[in-house]
Length: 298
Ligand SMILES: NC(=O)c1ccc[n+]([C@@H]2O[C@H](COP(=O)([O-])OP(=O)(O)OC[C@H]3O[C@@H](n4cnc5c(N)ncnc54)[C@H](O)[C@@H]3O)[C@@H](O)[C@H]2O)c1
Image 1 (cartoon, rainbow, N blue to C red):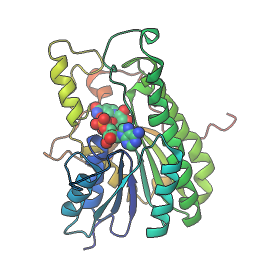
Image 2 (image 1 turned 60 degrees about the vertical axis):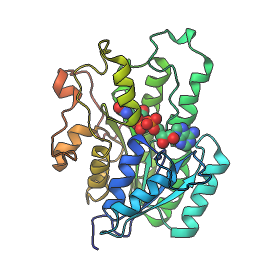
Image 3 (image 1 turned 180 degrees about the horizontal axis):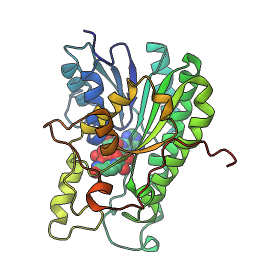
Image 4 (image 1 turned 30 degrees about the vertical axis):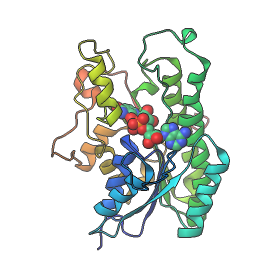
């Protein structure tokens, strides 16, 4: 029963499907109690696949040996009151929070349409509301609990798009913003031994990504060409390694390429394969994530 994350409490936002779901499953398998959010209200079959209840059930199954489990909470991350209620619930039920993974992002339907920004609707700014602002709001709540307990890890799921042009102006700016939020939060959280990191995730074979790749067949954009992609669980394995690293504070405030940090921890994908970083694969030296630096006034 003594798994690496036994006794730890985690929250993974946007985990009814996609990367959030993959991360939740790994954290539960490694022993954590994982709160899972998504907007889906499960009327009828609570455990419907593709809903928060469905992920919670899979977490229970994956945590059968380690004592890990999933707790589903319907929460729209665009609604501050719902998010406040979520954190009040975690505090009441667990009294602590060890890991926050910000993953919920409301991608626009026209994300892949190659139109300039002024020809896309202003509603695309939803990606800032649920994808950047929402990362800040959850981190704000989590920081209160983590500073109180003097430990914790806050993870931003970000991407190379923080420094590259990918899928247009709004999407790229979303990732640049969350990278920067993680860097500055780290400075203020350092006295409390709470770490923040932003992870540049490469192509990940979510349900949606597989669908998009099928649609794009034969007309691959520069941003995805040549990538093989990882499973949705690979980033979860990396986050579990970060969460159990006794020297995690040395990394706090940094932006890391998930594939590169996986190599540092000896983490492989579920099929045993090593995931290659896009930077390595395509020799793109300008894609420099910023590792931990103290840039205060320097
Ligand atoms: N898939 C990739 O290849 C890839 C690569 C790099 C980075 N990322 C990043 O990973 C993160 C997750 O992306 P994904 O590919 O898993 O997306 P996805 O669309 O498959 O999953 C998004 C999840 O967020 C939830 N969500 C969306 N809006 C919400 C809201 N308002 N409230 C609560 N939950 C909400 C959805 O229900 C879903 O569970 C995003 O930040 C994305 O930019 C993805």
